[in-house]
Image 1 (tube, one colour):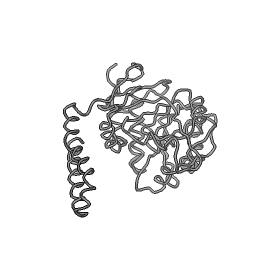
Image 2 (image 1 turned 90 degrees about the horizontal axis):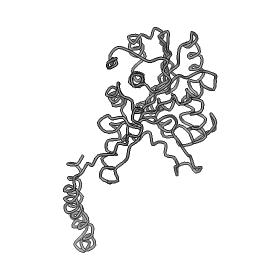
Image 3 (image 1 turned 135 degrees about the vertical axis):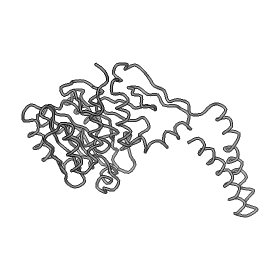
Image 4 (image 1 turned 90 degrees about the vertical axis):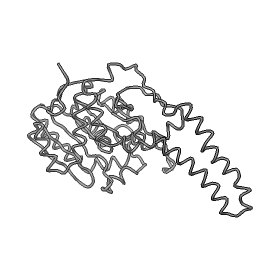
Length: 335
């Protein structure tokens, strides 16, 4: 059959399982919704979507479109210049909804457009179109809430694809959601993207413990844009530092599109038992050099700080600064 096109819209509109080509186009839809309404509408029409409606209220925006055979709902994700998005992302509290407890900020953000999403979706699937929902980052959280809301309204959701989405609710919500969606949510996350780990499962910010569990089937993007269902982290603390340094770039929607394009003819479900392991980022020689070099300088400088006090604050500062500089220089070479 050949490799599916990445330039001409092609979509398996009645697929019941993960489809690489669908994952690619849904990632494109998740990125496209960051555009302004005019550009968004024009782009979707080039994909063959003759009817396009942009729904926007407060800081929440989504697009609902159909091409006669499928209806697409895509939610915009986090934009740092939109304070409403930021406030929603930083909220930690939960409220009861959808069979469990969900993130209060995400719930309110979806509630802003809920009635219009329901009415527009009803119009867009009136002739039997299949319904697909997508979103990146905060948009993925909103896509999740839209999917469960529409299911509870009696709608059939054929598929949900989200990219770098945060947690939405607790274990009870997860169980209710997965039962309603029947295995049709594919949650794609880069292994170095920190956002899928947020909000934290338990936080000291909220006096009441907040617990979170992810929904759907998880697909991981490993370094080199490889897809896997299982990934084993390195226990090397330096490797972990490097991963943290890659967190922000790995959350960008463009990176998710690139990974989906690279795997447009490959499914991780074809090799579910394959475990990818985080590669070693340091050679034994580099680790030994680090142990004997700047880290030793830093420790020596710190241990001599007491005697340096007798020579005045300036000598202590000089000693510590030398050790810190050596360590910083090493990390610059590393990263």
